[in-house]
Image: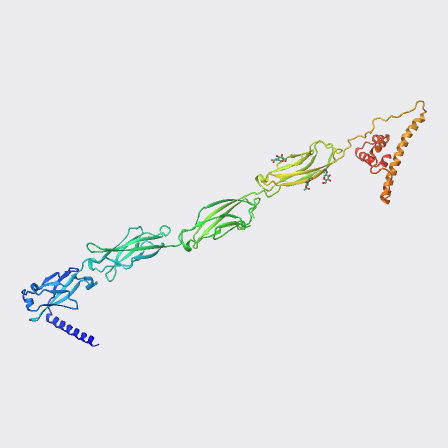
Length: 554
Ligand SMILES: *[C@@H]1O[C@H](CO)[C@@H](O)[C@H](O)[C@H]1NC(C)=O
Ligand SMILES: *[C@@H]1O[C@H](CO)[C@@H](O)[C@H](O)[C@H]1NC(C)=O
Ligand SMILES: *[C@@H]1O[C@H](CO)[C@@H](O)[C@H](O)[C@H]1NC(C)=O
């Protein structure tokens, strides 16, 4: 406390001294000297003796001294020569900072008699400092939507030199988008301002690196640099675009539900949210909505509902890709449905005659049509019947056939035919359909009764009476009668056996054929033939004659 009190007291004395000094010198112009900063110490400033008009010895005689405000004395006086010299190297920036001009005031005191002279030493600036950017890396985010002419103030550089040696201009590295202006702020310092000359396009150039140079007006000039990194900020200015505007796909009609038909893909030049794409069916009909579905994220188009070539063979599906804004792109997927042999051929019978009279030269049995819903080979049909039958399939119109007899049929050799109509398509695998019909051959009276023996030999003794003929004939008749009786007995015995399960000693099964033939081939049968001429019923009865002996006796 005591020490600081003393110090303040001393200071006051000094101030008082200068006030007196000032008063004694009032009205006198100060003497002005100048020195360039950074001049070596002990350099000559002026010869005071000459300046003050004193003799060389007088200065020392009168006790001349140099006094300066403040603690530091930058000058010294050579008492002998009267030269005022620099005490040390002077740094203008240290002494005065940005104050311009930099003036150091001092007094020359002559003690005997007391006399003061006011003087000033101006320290002249040299260009010994370069401009420096505090921020050597600047990041600027500029929207690609900024219109040309938009300005962006940048951080300035600093130069401790003053006047011309301070920053004079800013320069930007050559580029096609920006130029830089040098602006003067209210405090007189200069700062750079970036001006956009041409619209930016993030999709073309997402970022720019520029070099900003600050240059002072010294001679030679000095400069400092900073990097400017410009990040072009995206706006949603691009529509999604499909890799292909047209996709062609072919898929078999039996493809399963969920089958991946195709994956469409679009890209958007914008980034982030602006580039996010969602896919959808565009202007889709109900049929298309039912048949196809698209994954809005991946663009995968899958089968939703089942294809049917026989119903629809071709689909034109429009797809839209939309970004988060209002931009969208379109593409088309042409889907061709391929036929699969999934339909068997069909047979439709238009007409059918079940009973064909025998001996007809060419009788029509059936009229039929065949069809197959499939296309191409899958729908072509081959229509056949067994080839060992006396029937022919004749193709009339396309897919129409008539089934006719190949030659006159003979009921007596085959009375019934089973015909299998087979229709086969030519697809892979081959599908076939069969239709079975049974045709019966109806009888026509085309057979005359025939003797089982062409000759009968009868031995007759000579000289016999005519009655013997009758005896002979009667013996034949007796034989016949006996046969009939045996037959009837066998039948009766069978019937009673069926009733009582008793045994029968007669022949089993049908009556022996030769017995029937022999007996049936008599004159009775022959006379029957000649009696009637209507063919139908007589044939029927003939048949009965063979089967039922009793009837033929009548
Ligand atoms: C139709 O079927 C017949 C008999 O099976 C055969 O000979 C013929 O080659 C077939 N036609 C075609 C075109 O396959
Ligand atoms: C025809 O088919 C029927 C029934 O399948 C059969 O009873 C009959 O014997 C067959 N006829 C011929 C001549 O094959
Ligand atoms: C038609 O007849 C054939 C030969 O007898 C037989 O294999 C087939 O199963 C029959 N088809 C139909 C539909 O009855």
